[in-house]
Length: 430
View 1 (tube, rainbow, N blue to C red):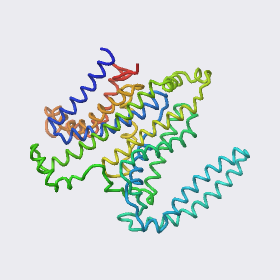
View 2: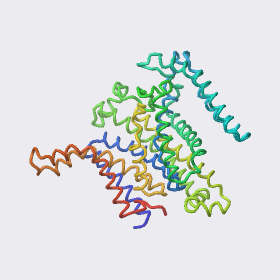
View 3: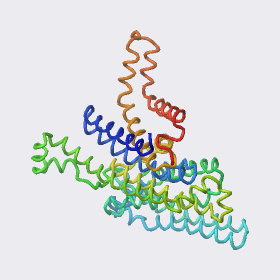
View 4: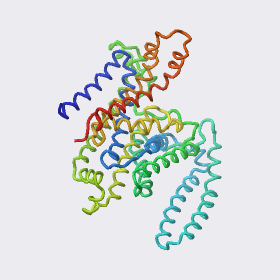
């Protein structure tokens, strides 16, 4: 089977699976899977840009996705005037001070090469930073902590948060890249994982910025609210004409709206990624991936090119994180777990086909579909497999209690099967 035919066949299979879900389990579940599949495909596209094209082993995906979610809060939530009056400018001034101290420390070290002077500057700056920050943060978090206790955002359209999420992630990637991209691949993986955990820890504990573990509810949406549609006589009449009640029709309408928006973003990013892959820049990145020593001998600045692609891939993950938070309507820092936002995304890239943008998108859809369906169908399947065991059997009870782990078992099994029978993924790089 040729590569083109295989690509069409596998994407047709994905379409059949989603449509079949709509027919057998309801259109609501099908659209839910489709929407998160689109977001997952974008995340996989970002990781594939880093690993599949450039060979960068980034396991800090979770941190960049979380920064995308934070961008939704900072961009689209209304500001809290009382909190800003209590210490908003002083709190952000302390953040600016911290950044200036880091830049100044680097400048002083480059000019003097005196470590003790840099250490003295950082210690003095730390106390100045805490003197400026602590009273402001305490005052902000004391403003109606049950409902707000943070500064809020800039009350801009929520769709603007998607590119802002990409910019936040790109900025963090620049800092990380300048620090860690000279490391060997295994050390780079450790560094990116550690830094992503630091990002999550900061978001969880800086209540003045994101409400921390209290979560931010009621995020603005780019589509109408279901209740508003249900109260619209014209919509109710149109829904009845299609044979739907108002509640079901409003839910489907909203989810379909998200599907169209997410599809547009995915197509745009996929086209750009394909153009980059087939350009001289993409050929250069693959040459660096395959043999860094030869690329350096040809005069290529390997570290700079790695920084470029690291920033681009992280920005795509940040955009996906902002889209996901918009879809959920909730920013919950405790929900960012490596299992979901790092391991699963890597499985998507490996199963789909590392180095192939279409393969990464395919892996995003297939793995997310199975991740959801195993949770839905797992208990029923385990019931069928154990029906012949007598009631009260310890083995039967253990299997039924362990059904919650079928997701992990399924992901591991799929990964093993793909690596055994198609080591380069379902859609290998040409």
